[in-house]
Length: 113
Length: 220
Picture 1 (cartoon, chains in turn yellow, brown):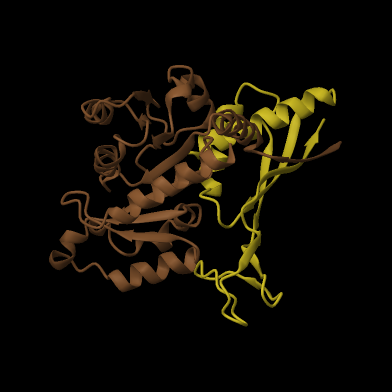
Picture 2: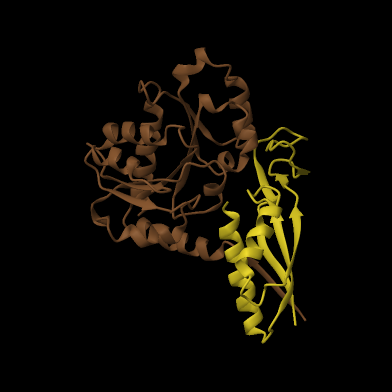
């Protein structure tokens, strides 16, 4: 249940941002969560609601965009969606593969009143 | 009103981890984050490692555990400094927990710190704790399907120790499939087949650790 620690991280960020912008209420939080993170969106939402109960984020809706796992071959330049966690280039079979996306744990923006 | 943020949720943890690594690098100390399921053999591997290396290298161990000090007691018998962190039910160690206990070690008298994380194949993979490298222990009795079920743990590791290979004849574990899955998740990984019970196959692990310590000291 490390979603609890991640939810606390989100809460710290959004409460600070809201306060710096003079907002009383956070209504919506947009998150970007990579496909290759150990995060369960449902568990994250559950933890966040529990932690946010007494804060300006108590009524905030979490919008979670799951970012696909995409890699780039450093030998031939091919970009590809990684399937079954096979980090080999499907075009040239090289193992020199760099992960471009899919590891994100980000707060993108929030909506406040 | 919309506020653009674009903040990484783990930034605070990663910053503390970077500070720890910087502090320990200045002393030339190599730090290993040891990961794996409960019962995979992390503590047995540590005991073998201490016996093999303690005459040449100055080691310390930080033990992460939910509630008990059973593992720390096992390490303490080998006469190396050991610190227990109880997470009180928390599923992983984080960087602040490590920072809070580092002052209890004599950092001027160490070559290597091994941190045994909480037994868990999911959560600890996401949290850096100041280490130079992660090593993951996977045991034969867990089944060959685990790397694909918990890929991040194997993607983040520099080494996987495939433990309990002495039990291969008594299980239906598909060794070839396990090796193929681990190396497709992480083509650069060093894979070591060993038995921490008998001690067989561990020499490449000891050699790898010595090399990491040597490289770390050469850079500091």
